[in-house]
Image (tube, rainbow, N blue to C red; front, top):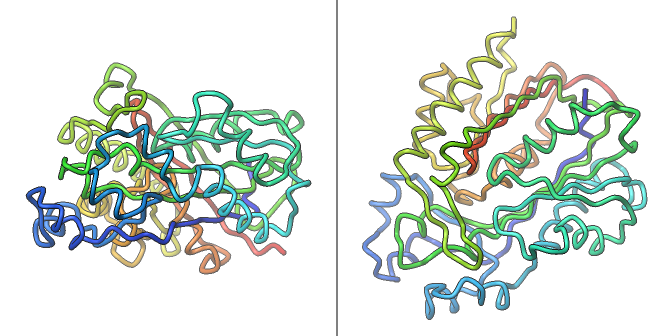
Length: 329
């Protein structure tokens, strides 16, 4: 069992509104976007003038003009997580990172984040695109507790707008940037526990979502959305089935788009007041989406709550977590 001691999030200040996208003249407007994906705004690490003038024709250049590096967004989220956990960077014995669009192929992203925070510890990357947060925790949950340091920092920096072709309306309307981080332990208890975790991969379909080296994001949208809805629904139904009291049950899904999430809730019987999401205000932020939702609701968690987190990602990968909240100090 893993214990979640603290979680944090960071969203850059530059806002891509639907009006901004409409002014790019790529065949989209507010009505079209809201009807199809239900997203009002997204955040980006890119200067808006850069997007307006270049449409991000050369993704490699996006790394150079970014207002924040992945290490900086991850560190900002990690500082919030550490503060909530009541810990210092020196308390961390391992850093695990993953990103859909990493800054480097070498060194490991975890190393750059640890350097930004002044952490001297084992650093390793575990990346599975949008399901990274869940798979990181599932892998740690499978390890022997005595093989892990007391506190592990997991981080998910996402700057997917660096890989977006802003002439492609199907991608431009979806994605935003964010960073998230969580402090977990297998040996030190906390009020939030990961009592169940699972993950898997449909590798035969791995090329349905791709970001080539220094290239643009591409996906087979219909097939990927179908997989996401089916997989999240099955995971959610499985987690929900084992609970006797669903009155304090909450659902957080992969923040792909609002329509997909509502379909999952409808099929799994989750009412609106038990569905936590942020995709309308921040877009699809990859692996940062679901943990950012949890971070936003951190202070709203109460003893007796159960939170199901169901994720999907490129690969095609999936992961789910069941969290319980107890009355611990």
